[in-house]
Image (cartoon, rainbow, N blue to C red; front, side, top):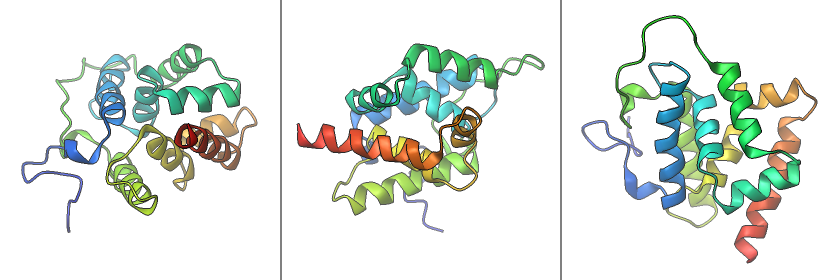
Length: 165
């Protein structure tokens, strides 16, 4: 299997990420630690996007009518594990990323390429989080009445605004 997003040693390739996407992914490690998980899961990826929002994520949140710090805190509370040992140090290596996060990263890279870009943007990650089947992040929004389709539509509009400017 071609691990197109990983280097030979298992480290995530930095050249496939914009600076903003790299910041968000690094922040997802912090969010995993803060919520006491031993690996980065899709909610942590979403929290990373919220903790290090670029202009596209800000536009998405504004269109949604969401307060980014409040939404981040809600997700931290929702995914906090209070029992168990503190997690070991986490790195941006294959073994610390869930299968779903790896799939999202690969799908986001393919989305970027489909849009004529060689690097993943935060909105590629956000849109892929919402369009992935059985997305726990999308499910959390659906519980409060916002569908994955609506989240995706808002993110695509935000992406268009960022691209047009």
